[in-house]
Image 1 (cartoon, rainbow, N blue to C red):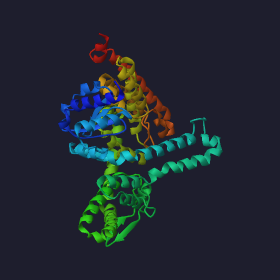
Image 2 (image 1 turned 90 degrees about the horizontal axis):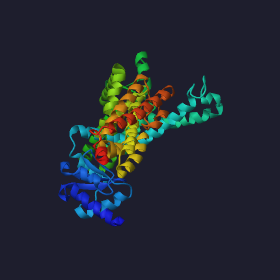
Image 3 (image 1 turned 90 degrees about the vertical axis):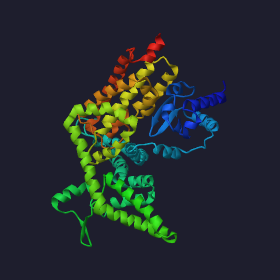
Image 4 (image 1 turned 180 degrees about the vertical axis):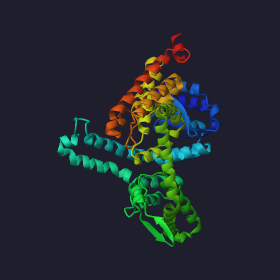
Length: 480
């Protein structure tokens, strides 16, 4: 069979296996996956889809039924899929919009947070890795007993200082990034969202990190306007206030577009949108949301500190199911808030989970008799060790089931250790083996021990489970 014939046959089979063309609302594709929105996902024959030629995996998330095919190949299958169904080609955005209509309110909230923060991850990761590099150079006792690498080699001091300047920029002006992304997501002008973010971290305001001291000393600056006393305090390191401000901006902007005559729209709408939003932010919304963010951070810290190792193990055990639903994205705003408060424990938890998933996948690769599964497990297992778990989870571990259970237990054990030793990261980063560069220097060794526990236990427990015919039905049937 030629390549063209395989593409055609795969497309024809998939159309039938997802319930026929009458069950398909829309279809698009990304670099590796066919993304479908189905009227009724229960009509899709997942078992047969996974057996189809060229298909490497399948999962459903956020209202989308996604079929993993592979880079390049998915383009060819998609072309034929569209021809067979008679559907118009859709963009990923259009498919997401169709999928959003099928979500419940909680799913929509999680997706909103995901849509705002996921585009910011490259910037945060880049800054986090640079912070980690600066940590390595300036940490006392890491390479030498009583001093740092910079102290041992003074010529590196300016290089470390430069790297620290580069690393701190994204976090110093984080409200600008969030303002741009959130305003765009809420349907407003993203550049006006960025302006709101700039206003919230203006140099004319008291830096938010100095607010606590200023309250104690009674030196908080104020604006006195029409009898109102308004605190002149910035929002550095905060998340919820700028999210709320971006939402208000988009709402006000839409109202003004409708109310203001077209001839004056370009002049008055941006002006009034920024002024009204900024005034509401500093008088009402900002303070409420700052308090809410601080309470949320304090609550999560209380749970972590109160339940200790037990809480860490529960968190680690449940982290993979959170990832399945996409709710792990909702933790990113909390992590940023924790980092601003001095350090977050979430990177250690996420890293232990991801490494455990990767170890379980690699174990499944050794145990399975299916050549296709071996190939998928080899690449996705390594990817999970480096922080990208979705291919491993959906393509291997959930399909075989026992590796997923083994990974959850392995994650719980590693997370218990990093909680016991209070491993804290000072920036978000790659949640995997290389995540150690984003943690405090004194936590690096314990971070590596924690992920090593997850790796070894995740692999070992998965291996033991694979010996059980009841758990590993695939292996049992292959050996008969």
